Amino acid sequence: MEDLLLEIKDLNIEFHDHDAPERVVSGLSMRLNRGEILGIVGESGSGKSMTAMAIAGLLRRHDMKISGEIYFEGTEILHAGRSELRRLQGDDIGIIFQEPMTSLNPVKKIGWQVEESLRIHRPQLSREQRYALAIECLKSVELDEPEVIYKKYPHELSGGMRQRVMTASAMICDPRLLIADEPTTALDVTIQLQIVKLLQKLNREKNTSILFISHDLSLVRKLCGRILVMHDGRVVEEGDSHEIFTHPRQAYTKELIGAIPRMEKLQQF
Ligand SMILES: Nc1ncnc2c1ncn2[C@@H]1O[C@H](COP(=O)(O)OP(=O)(O)O)[C@@H](O)[C@H]1O
Ligand SMILES: [Mg+2]
Image (cartoon, rainbow, N blue to C red; front, side, top):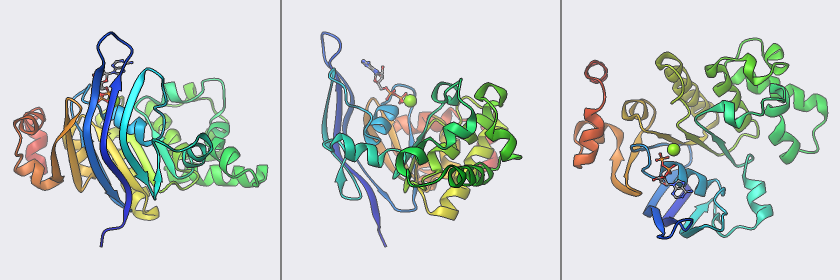
């Protein structure tokens, strides 16, 4: 049975910071159910991140024109007030980005950063309760010795560990939606697969819906039941991931599949 969490209707995003307006997302509509993992795939510049930021309520700029509707559990995000957005961000909707080094604060210890959403959304918790939750969350993203990690600075961790820390920060308030925007792109292949497994585990254990954005179709296929293919700001193909992979309808999707190294493709069949 369908249990809708997120619905986008006819999303359009335009930049007005140059002479001619530039449309970067055109007529995008999609639905995401509770507990579902949906992939958005498309080459660099196809409008994936802009879509992710619109869902997270992060596109509020004067040089942009946005139209359409984005419903998250009945709340319309594009027209939500500031306080309503703040309530959603980090609590109901968690987001992780490609390069944790730019999203993590270099001068704050890991523990402080993982607890940030708790300070905002769970102000009633004591310092000890926050600490206990942070340690539990660092454990859940499979970081060994969470008590040691808690006291470290971002530069003292590897890229893969930093992405786990970002994931922990995004998950600490148990969001119902996790947006992962190219979360593994900066990492090597083995670590990429570990992060994908971790997202699978979080989805299974907490029923978190995940919007997984990547330019890497083979990675999206491993994780997602359903895929949207974006090209030039539009959804050009949508469907069951196995179906898209084995019977792509659009020339563009075939190209994306063609870009996957041959050995990897063979392993997947
Ligand atoms: N400030 C800006 N002004 C004009 N265009 C922009 C701006 N920022 C991003 N874009 C354009 O928006 C398009 C979509 O970008 P993005 O959503 O980041 O793509 P993706 O995440 O799929 O790589 C790109 O063509 C990019 O050049
Ligand atoms: Mg992007």
